[in-house]
Image 1: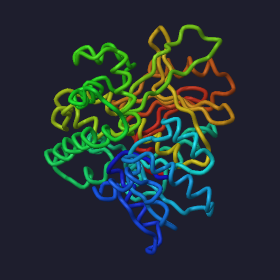
Image 2: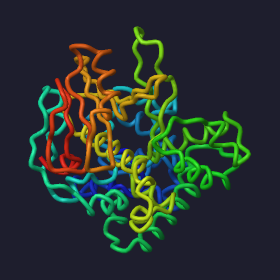
Image 3: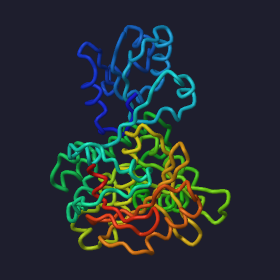
Image 4: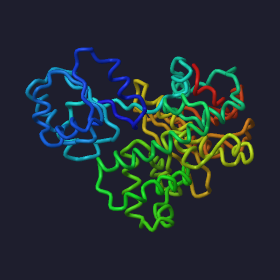
Amino acid sequence: MLAGPRQAGKTTLARSLAEKSRTYLTLDDATTLSAAKSDPAGLVRGLDQAIIDEVQRAPDLLLAIKESVDRDPRPGRFLITGSANLMTLPRIADSLAGRMEIIRLLPLAQSEILAQPAPRFLESLFAGRAPEPGTLRLGGDLVDLVLAGGYPEAVARKSWTRRQDWYDNYVEAVVERDVRDIANVDQLDRMPRLLRALAAHAGQLINHAGVGAGLDLNHVTTQKYTGIFEQLFLVRTLPPWHNNALKRLTKKPKLHFLDSGLLAALTGLTPEKVAADRSRFGAILETFVFSEILKLTGWSDDRFSLSHFRDKELDEVDIVLEDRDGRIVGLEVKASATVRSEDFSGLRKLAAATGQRFAFGAVLYDHEQTIAFGDRLAAAPLALLQKS
């Protein structure tokens, strides 16, 4: 199963990989959707090998696919795509355990947009090495590429007005179609407003009561609706890093959007507004870096858990990665071209808390030089996320 947000390129990839003889069905087609809902077993019964697109529109179809796979267990018979994380539905997850491999497909990474090999950035950090210096400074290009995001259709549109129009239509389609397909929402009209309210809190510790207050939503409903957006791969809650030996750590998750272009559109941020007030750029840059790191971890042969670090003194690390061997890498994001020793305060605390497990800590900034700031600590160029 290719799973990821709508318009990330799942259909294009699935059809390019599949044999021409393979049957293609999309549940965006009204007739096919009706058949999938009224008689899912009948629809699947006549299929030998098939691509089934947007399967979240009829989740019961997955149960019919399970029955077909149980009868004929040849690998790869079904290539399905979904714009929602259906494995959060217990009966779906239980029935398909061990029968389906899920590949996440997020919007394009910067290396993909530039047609560059995947960066070896994380591999260097987990090996305890500072990334190689000499990468070009992004400068003015940084704002443009962060605000553009990674959705192929949005990236292809060169004017900010046309991108804004695309994102407005995108949000409307997600709410009107995808939210209805996966959840019973009593207050559907408030979902776009909630998404914009969440955008205003991106990169911050999530307070559901505070977010929902202006929409007359209690914290339970706000948390439920935020979970729906997470199912649709629009947002991600990043859990806090914890250590039993440290008692003064925050226990609240942090909210991120999975695409910085969508976040920019929801907040109305443009290059002109960033130029007028650079302070508005920090949160969206952090979201951009988080999204790029998430894509790099998805491509890696290793597996990582992601979290954030913040203590009661407000020292923090934006992104904490831990591999299967328990090694720790910390990343802090700065929107400036200069880094000070104080910017490493959170990383130093994380290093002290994890000891030999701490592989490396980096402050990512907009400069071309990698500069050491002590043992296993360095300032590193943001451009390393683009190129090897």
